Every structure is written in C-alpha cells, then in structure tokens.
Image 1 (cartoon, helix red, strand yellow):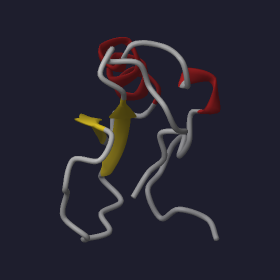
Image 2 (cartoon, rainbow, N blue to C red; image 1 turned 30 degrees about the horizontal axis):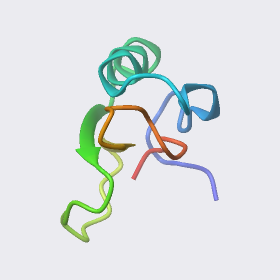
Image 3 (spheres, one colour; image 1 turned 180 degrees about the vertical axis):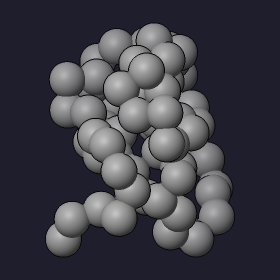
Length: 70
C-alpha cells in the first residue's frame, strides 16, 4: 500500500547509524514527517500517523530497525 504522505517513506540504509543522525537524515529527505528517536521497547501510542517515523534505537543510541512512516 502506498503511503498518503508525500516523499520517502522508509530508510533501510539508516539501520546501524546513530538515532540522531538518522532523525536528521529522515527530516532532510522528507520534511513532511517528524522522526522520533525512541529506545526499543519504550511504550508509544498505537495511533497510526503518516507524519511520524519511529526511529527505534538500542541502549547505545544505534538504530535497530528500519525507520518507516506511520
């Protein structure tokens, strides 16, 4: 299913980089979304929002899964 949010919708290439670098790159490549850096396992809202990208990181602040819109 195509995202109704214009612009890039996923960032496989950011797995393994720091969350802060990842969030900055996501914002640069798609200014329509807000990248939110979250520690893996942190409770978050279940809402599906096309303007959010959960940027899941480990305790070393390294991205652990593909950031994607929603």
